[in-house]
Length: 244
Image (cartoon, rainbow, N blue to C red; front, side, top):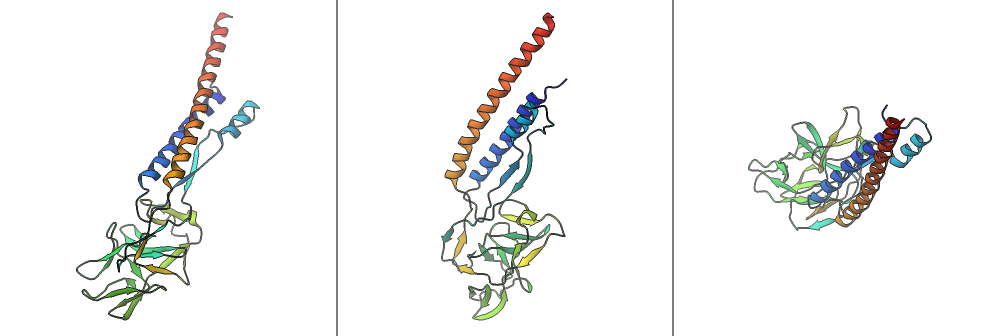
């Protein structure tokens, strides 16, 4: 018969491994514009271990979900006329091969046909009237309210949406998101604040992530020691059974 306590310890090691991978992934992408760090939700190893020790019905520790904290990154000034940042909640809307997408990376460019595209991925940027198109060679300006002026004339406004429930967004690459379900609701941001000449960096603090890694390493070492001791105890119990 399998030892439930030993199984819980082994599952906890797998969870800490997944958490470590997520932390490393966050640090690797710390310099990616608009990147959102991922946090994991797990059921507690100490809680499930306590239930097992008291002969209750425990569950194996496992990663139950991931979420992306709605915390803005810092702003980096570029002075570029096509670089914009959101000084409010929400996302720029883009068009991808999967359909509608959402990002806070406001580094844009114009192609030869005057289409406004994202620098990362070349995704068309959506305005209130659809994909934004500027007459090539025209001076472009973004107002604080999100209006787009070409040659001093308003041609469209950036479409800014926010998720009714931030957990309804699924990450494509950490900087671009999409709805998990067609039924998930995106809301118009009524009074957006656009900062021209800036872009938003990732919301990752390398120092914070490094501290989490250190704490996670201590946790992993403690669980490893627990599993090792439990394995020794089970081995002794089996040997005693053989003697009898």
